[in-house]
Each structure stands twice: as structure tokens, then as C-alpha cells.
Image (tube, rainbow, N blue to C red; front, side, top):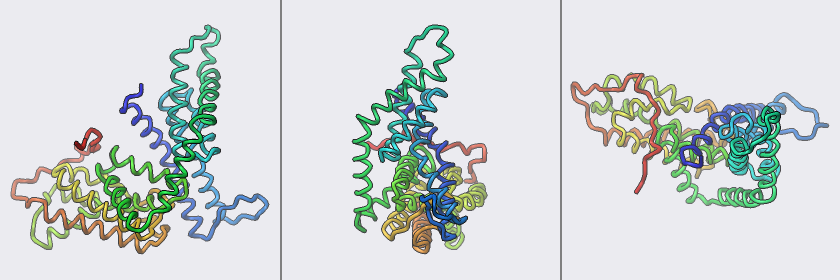
Length: 363
């Protein structure tokens, strides 16, 4: 029940449900801000269309604790876990426990609902009431009291401490943290390892810290752009490092990368995984270090190059993206072996399974 695989599955399920809300809310805020809108909280103040878009986006971001808690609970306990999950997420938002509170609350209420579902025996006449009334009410009471009186306070302190730590970083520290976020965020090209720092970035965005989100958005574009540039380098320096099949895959991966879909390079990476992952991860780290240290921030968690105009310091964002991509391309052209005739063994579209490095361990 509490295995690492199960816990990861519940978290990933919740994230998949939560991402559309983050993207929609972030874009609403960005579009509203670009049009000169502001977040209006006073109902007596007249509202313009840009104000309405910005305010709607802010309201959407405020739902994140409830979403993450509700869908984690749903993943654990199925339908009876939805209602208490959203309630516990609302408690986390009320306490100021934010994203971390919503996530922890989701696990608490989800497993509480599951235990009640499996262990509580009721008379036959009450069986039909279990999923609709008994499980949601009991699990909400138990988990709610735990959140209010046991774990809510420490989570608030932890959230405030993490927020203060990020806000208090000097430039040299931001270089290091930006590199780590970018490096890990690209390590398995959208797989489970990269989702961990990306999840932290999304959580910090909820607390109003947008720098890590800028790193996440820019770094995700580095692998496809860097590999595409390395293909151009290979032609300039007359060193053939890609097969014909890989070149066809690069033509597909590049536009996907501009939209922040780094998974397009997986068929290319799988043919030479160690060299490719080393080059792309270092390039992503360089982009993260430059982006974070130069104050690039993004209030939109997805969208690729199309959200760069909405970022803080967009010219620095472009500089960070191109620098990291050039680093990736340079490393690839140096370390990849030259292809010979008959080496065309590229993967086909049917081989494009997700690159899962979740079992990869450092010793």
C-alpha cells in the first residue's frame, strides 16, 4: 500500500490532472498582464476584460492545493476519496500550507478513506451509503482534524522556510540552484526523475516564486534545440554524427521542442543514450544557471517559446536558451562518434516508448 511505486503513481496521477489547470491559469494571468490587467479582489471596483482574465487566472492558481489533494486522494481511494480530498486541499490553502500541504493532505485523506473502505464493516442496509456518505464524511473528519491540529502548522513553517530560502539566494547561489534544477529537469526527458524538480517549481509558483518556473520552461526546450544545432554543426564540420533515420527524427523533434515537448528527442537519445543525456543535461543546467541568476521569471508553467514574451527579462531568457542549446550542440559534436556507412539503425516511431530511468541509481 505504501510502496514507493504506489506513492509515485498517485502523485503522477494527480499531476496529470493538475497540469491543465496550471497551464490555463498561467496563460490567463500572462495574457491579462500583457494587456495591462490586474488582479481585482474588491467586488465594488469596476473590472476591465484584462482585469477579468488576470483575476480568473489567479483564482485558478488558488485551486492548486485542492486539485493536488483531491486527485491524489482519488488515485488512492477511487471515487469516495474525491470529496474529502478537495476539502483537505481547501484546508491546506486556508492554513497557508500551499502546494506541499495539499500534497501531504491528499495522501493522508486518501489512505484514511481507503482504510475505512476496506476495514469498516457496516450493516447491509448501510452498504450503499459507504461511497456516498460514510467514507467521505469520516475520512474528511479524521484527516481534517489531523491537518488542523497536527501537520498543518509544521507544513506552513516548512513552506515559509523554503520560500524565504529561495527569496534570500544571492547570485552565486542562484547559479548553483538554477544549474541543478535545469540538469535534473532534463535528465530523463520528461520521465519520472525530471518530474520531481518540475513539481517543486510548480509548488514554488503557487507561493509567488517564478524564477524556478522560468528555468523549467527554458530548460525543457534545450535538448531538441541543442540536438538540432548539433546537426547543423555536423554539416558545417563535415562530421556525420546522425543517421538518416535520426535526421528525420530531428526534423520532428525540433518543432516539438519549441513547444516545450522534449520527448521528441527520445528516439535519437536511445541510439546513444549516455553521450546524449550527458550533453543535454549539462546544456539544460547551463540554461538554468543563466536564467535563474539573471532574474528570468515565468508565471506560465508551459507553452515553450510562445510564453517567452510574457516572462520577466525575455531577452535574458532567449540568451539563456540559446547558450544552453549551443553548449549541448558543442558537446555532442565533440563526444559523439562519427557515423559510417551501414550505421543507420535509428529507431522507428513504434520504438518511441517513454524513456523510464526511474530505477537509475547513483552509488
